[in-house]
Image (cartoon, rainbow, N blue to C red):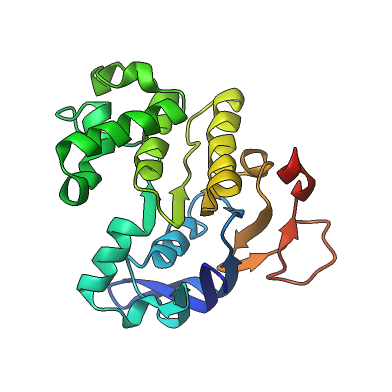
Length: 243
Protein backbone atom coordinates (compact mmCIF):
# COMPACT_ATOMS: atom_id res chain seq x y z
CA UNK A 1 0.00 0.00 0.00
CA UNK A 2 1.21 3.50 -0.81
CA UNK A 3 2.03 5.73 2.15
CA UNK A 4 0.63 8.88 0.55
CA UNK A 5 -1.61 9.18 -2.50
CA UNK A 6 -2.89 12.29 -4.26
CA UNK A 7 -5.47 11.38 -6.88
CA UNK A 8 -6.78 14.03 -9.28
CA UNK A 9 -6.41 16.83 -6.73
CA UNK A 10 -7.74 20.28 -7.62
CA UNK A 11 -7.48 23.47 -5.59
CA UNK A 12 -8.32 27.10 -6.24
CA UNK A 13 -7.64 30.28 -4.30
CA UNK A 14 -10.13 33.12 -4.28
CA UNK A 15 -9.56 36.85 -4.30
CA UNK A 16 -12.98 38.34 -3.78
CA UNK A 17 -15.11 36.90 -6.56
CA UNK A 18 -12.12 35.95 -8.70
CA UNK A 19 -11.11 32.28 -8.77
CA UNK A 20 -7.45 31.40 -9.34
CA UNK A 21 -6.93 27.69 -10.06
CA UNK A 22 -3.72 26.49 -8.39
CA UNK A 23 -3.83 22.71 -8.88
CA UNK A 24 -5.55 21.00 -11.81
CA UNK A 25 -5.85 17.23 -11.37
CA UNK A 26 -2.55 16.64 -9.57
CA UNK A 27 -1.70 13.01 -8.85
CA UNK A 28 1.34 11.43 -7.20
CA UNK A 29 2.28 8.60 -4.88
CA UNK A 30 4.86 8.37 -2.09
CA UNK A 31 5.98 5.00 -0.71
CA UNK A 32 7.93 4.31 2.45
CA UNK A 33 11.65 4.60 1.69
CA UNK A 34 11.18 7.08 -1.16
CA UNK A 35 12.27 10.71 -1.47
CA UNK A 36 9.93 12.39 -3.95
CA UNK A 37 10.76 15.93 -5.09
CA UNK A 38 8.41 18.43 -6.69
CA UNK A 39 10.01 21.46 -8.30
CA UNK A 40 8.58 24.59 -9.83
CA UNK A 41 8.96 28.34 -9.91
CA UNK A 42 7.83 30.60 -7.10
CA UNK A 43 4.05 30.76 -7.12
CA UNK A 44 3.63 27.48 -9.01
CA UNK A 45 1.59 25.96 -6.18
CA UNK A 46 4.20 23.80 -4.45
CA UNK A 47 3.24 24.90 -0.94
CA UNK A 48 -0.45 24.40 -1.71
CA UNK A 49 0.32 20.88 -2.92
CA UNK A 50 2.28 20.06 0.24
CA UNK A 51 -0.34 21.61 2.51
CA UNK A 52 -2.97 19.34 1.00
CA UNK A 53 -0.64 16.33 1.21
CA UNK A 54 -0.18 17.00 4.93
CA UNK A 55 -3.90 17.34 5.54
CA UNK A 56 -3.69 20.96 6.66
CA UNK A 57 -6.27 21.86 4.02
CA UNK A 58 -8.86 19.98 1.97
CA UNK A 59 -8.82 19.77 -1.84
CA UNK A 60 -11.66 21.19 -3.88
CA UNK A 61 -11.71 17.96 -5.87
CA UNK A 62 -9.94 14.62 -5.91
CA UNK A 63 -8.62 12.75 -2.88
CA UNK A 64 -5.63 12.79 -0.56
CA UNK A 65 -5.05 9.55 1.35
CA UNK A 66 -2.48 8.62 4.00
CA UNK A 67 -2.05 4.89 4.56
CA UNK A 68 -5.31 4.36 2.67
CA UNK A 69 -7.35 6.83 4.74
CA UNK A 70 -8.92 9.87 3.10
CA UNK A 71 -7.55 12.82 5.08
CA UNK A 72 -10.58 14.99 4.36
CA UNK A 73 -12.84 12.37 5.99
CA UNK A 74 -10.93 12.27 9.28
CA UNK A 75 -12.19 14.02 12.37
CA UNK A 76 -10.20 16.98 13.64
CA UNK A 77 -9.04 14.90 16.58
CA UNK A 78 -7.79 12.01 14.44
CA UNK A 79 -6.10 14.40 12.03
CA UNK A 80 -4.34 16.11 14.94
CA UNK A 81 -3.15 12.70 16.13
CA UNK A 82 -1.69 12.00 12.67
CA UNK A 83 0.16 15.31 12.71
CA UNK A 84 1.51 14.53 16.15
CA UNK A 85 2.60 10.95 15.58
CA UNK A 86 2.76 10.07 11.88
CA UNK A 87 3.19 13.12 9.64
CA UNK A 88 5.97 15.65 10.22
CA UNK A 89 6.28 19.04 8.51
CA UNK A 90 9.67 20.70 7.98
CA UNK A 91 9.62 24.48 7.85
CA UNK A 92 12.16 26.06 5.55
CA UNK A 93 13.36 28.49 8.23
CA UNK A 94 12.73 26.43 11.34
CA UNK A 95 11.78 28.29 14.50
CA UNK A 96 11.08 32.00 14.27
CA UNK A 97 10.95 32.39 18.04
CA UNK A 98 13.96 33.66 19.96
CA UNK A 99 12.44 32.27 23.16
CA UNK A 100 13.23 28.66 22.24
CA UNK A 101 16.75 27.34 21.86
CA UNK A 102 17.40 24.58 19.31
CA UNK A 103 17.15 21.73 21.82
CA UNK A 104 13.79 22.88 23.18
CA UNK A 105 12.53 23.61 19.68
CA UNK A 106 13.26 20.04 18.62
CA UNK A 107 11.86 18.57 21.85
CA UNK A 108 8.68 20.64 22.05
CA UNK A 109 6.40 18.40 19.90
CA UNK A 110 7.39 15.41 22.04
CA UNK A 111 6.64 16.78 25.51
CA UNK A 112 3.00 15.73 25.72
CA UNK A 113 3.70 12.16 24.65
CA UNK A 114 7.09 11.49 26.27
CA UNK A 115 7.58 14.03 29.06
CA UNK A 116 10.42 16.58 29.34
CA UNK A 117 13.32 14.24 30.11
CA UNK A 118 12.81 11.70 27.33
CA UNK A 119 11.80 14.45 24.91
CA UNK A 120 15.08 16.31 25.43
CA UNK A 121 17.08 13.09 25.19
CA UNK A 122 15.48 12.20 21.88
CA UNK A 123 15.86 15.79 20.67
CA UNK A 124 19.59 15.76 21.35
CA UNK A 125 19.92 12.42 19.55
CA UNK A 126 18.14 13.93 16.54
CA UNK A 127 20.46 16.95 16.56
CA UNK A 128 23.43 14.60 16.69
CA UNK A 129 21.98 12.60 13.79
CA UNK A 130 22.00 15.70 11.55
CA UNK A 131 25.38 16.89 12.85
CA UNK A 132 24.02 19.87 14.77
CA UNK A 133 24.49 18.76 18.39
CA UNK A 134 26.98 21.58 19.05
CA UNK A 135 24.20 24.13 18.66
CA UNK A 136 21.81 22.49 21.13
CA UNK A 137 22.16 25.18 23.79
CA UNK A 138 22.97 28.17 21.62
CA UNK A 139 20.70 31.12 20.90
CA UNK A 140 18.60 30.75 17.79
CA UNK A 141 19.81 34.17 16.62
CA UNK A 142 23.39 32.87 16.57
CA UNK A 143 22.66 30.09 14.09
CA UNK A 144 23.40 30.25 10.39
CA UNK A 145 20.65 29.56 7.85
CA UNK A 146 22.25 26.18 7.13
CA UNK A 147 22.23 25.20 10.82
CA UNK A 148 18.64 26.34 11.19
CA UNK A 149 17.71 24.06 8.31
CA UNK A 150 19.46 21.15 10.02
CA UNK A 151 17.61 21.86 13.27
CA UNK A 152 14.30 21.93 11.40
CA UNK A 153 15.07 18.51 9.93
CA UNK A 154 16.08 17.26 13.38
CA UNK A 155 12.74 18.30 14.83
CA UNK A 156 10.91 16.27 12.20
CA UNK A 157 13.13 13.22 12.63
CA UNK A 158 12.83 13.30 16.43
CA UNK A 159 9.13 12.57 16.09
CA UNK A 160 9.91 9.33 14.18
CA UNK A 161 7.17 9.95 11.60
CA UNK A 162 6.03 7.71 8.76
CA UNK A 163 5.74 10.66 6.35
CA UNK A 164 7.96 13.73 6.30
CA UNK A 165 6.92 16.75 4.22
CA UNK A 166 9.51 19.46 3.58
CA UNK A 167 8.55 22.79 2.04
CA UNK A 168 11.68 24.12 0.28
CA UNK A 169 14.07 23.00 3.07
CA UNK A 170 17.10 24.28 1.12
CA UNK A 171 15.86 27.87 0.68
CA UNK A 172 18.72 30.35 0.70
CA UNK A 173 21.43 27.72 1.08
CA UNK A 174 24.58 27.26 -0.98
CA UNK A 175 25.12 24.13 -2.99
CA UNK A 176 27.16 22.31 -0.30
CA UNK A 177 24.63 22.94 2.47
CA UNK A 178 21.79 22.20 0.08
CA UNK A 179 23.20 18.78 -0.73
CA UNK A 180 23.76 18.09 2.96
CA UNK A 181 20.14 18.80 3.87
CA UNK A 182 18.74 16.80 0.95
CA UNK A 183 21.17 13.99 1.74
CA UNK A 184 19.78 13.82 5.27
CA UNK A 185 16.24 13.59 3.91
CA UNK A 186 17.29 10.82 1.53
CA UNK A 187 18.98 8.95 4.38
CA UNK A 188 15.80 9.28 6.47
CA UNK A 189 13.89 7.65 3.63
CA UNK A 190 16.34 4.86 2.86
CA UNK A 191 17.61 4.04 6.35
CA UNK A 192 14.49 4.80 8.37
CA UNK A 193 11.79 3.74 5.92
CA UNK A 194 10.24 7.18 5.98
CA UNK A 195 8.34 8.54 3.00
CA UNK A 196 9.60 12.02 2.14
CA UNK A 197 7.82 14.57 -0.06
CA UNK A 198 9.89 17.67 -0.73
CA UNK A 199 9.27 20.88 -2.68
CA UNK A 200 12.27 22.65 -4.20
CA UNK A 201 12.58 25.75 -6.41
CA UNK A 202 14.81 24.27 -9.13
CA UNK A 203 16.25 21.07 -10.54
CA UNK A 204 19.66 21.43 -8.86
CA UNK A 205 18.14 21.02 -5.39
CA UNK A 206 16.62 17.62 -6.06
CA UNK A 207 19.31 15.60 -7.81
CA UNK A 208 19.34 13.11 -4.91
CA UNK A 209 15.62 12.41 -5.12
CA UNK A 210 14.36 8.98 -6.10
CA UNK A 211 11.39 10.41 -8.00
CA UNK A 212 10.85 13.83 -9.55
CA UNK A 213 7.86 15.87 -10.66
CA UNK A 214 7.64 19.34 -12.19
CA UNK A 215 4.69 21.54 -11.20
CA UNK A 216 3.67 24.07 -13.85
CA UNK A 217 0.34 25.80 -14.47
CA UNK A 218 -1.27 23.67 -11.83
CA UNK A 219 -0.27 20.35 -13.35
CA UNK A 220 2.40 17.80 -12.48
CA UNK A 221 4.66 16.81 -15.36
CA UNK A 222 7.65 14.61 -15.99
CA UNK A 223 10.83 16.68 -16.37
CA UNK A 224 11.92 17.54 -19.90
CA UNK A 225 13.55 14.67 -21.71
CA UNK A 226 11.34 11.95 -20.29
CA UNK A 227 9.19 10.14 -22.83
CA UNK A 228 6.26 9.67 -20.51
CA UNK A 229 3.23 11.90 -20.59
CA UNK A 230 2.19 14.52 -18.03
CA UNK A 231 2.07 13.14 -14.50
CA UNK A 232 4.70 10.49 -15.17
CA UNK A 233 7.19 9.82 -12.40
CA UNK A 234 10.86 9.95 -13.29
CA UNK A 235 13.14 7.75 -11.19
CA UNK A 236 16.68 8.91 -10.51
CA UNK A 237 19.66 7.40 -8.69
CA UNK A 238 17.76 4.26 -7.71
CA UNK A 239 21.06 2.38 -7.84
CA UNK A 240 22.45 4.50 -5.01
CA UNK A 241 20.15 2.86 -2.50
CA UNK A 242 22.68 0.11 -2.03
CA UNK A 243 25.72 2.36 -2.08
